[in-house]
Length: 163
Image 1 (cartoon, one colour):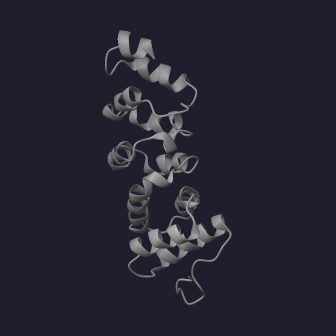
Image 2 (cartoon, rainbow, N blue to C red; image 1 turned 45 degrees about the horizontal axis):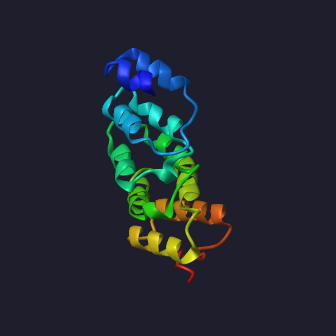
C-alpha cells in the first residue's frame, strides 16, 4: 500500500499492475477505494479487490461505486452478493429498482437474490413491496429468484404477496 500511495503517481500503469496482483481486501480501505474510484482505468478492479468486504463499506461509498458510469454493474453486483449487509437497505432498494428497469436477466436476478438473502422475511417483503409498483414479468422473475435463494415463497400463483 505504501508503494501505491507514496511512490507512484495517479494514473501510473504500475498502480494497476500492483492492484491486479493483490489478494482481496478483508475490509473497506477508504484511501485505496477512492484511488480506484477516481481512475476509470482502475475502477473495474473494485469488484475483485473488495469482493469479500462490501459488508464493511459505508453505504455512501457503495452508492458512489454503483452510480459510477464506468463501473461494470454486473461484476459489482456479483461481488456484492458474496458479502452484503442489512445496513445497506436503502442501497439494496435502489439496486432492486435499477435491476427491474432493465430487461430480464436471470443471472443479475440471482446475484440480487444473494444480496437480499441476509434479510428476515418481513424485511424482504417490505423491500420488495416498496420497490415493485406492479407485477411485471421482470418483477415476477426477480421475485422467483429471491424465493429460490431463500427457499420460501413470497408470492402466490396469481402474483399476490404472501404474508
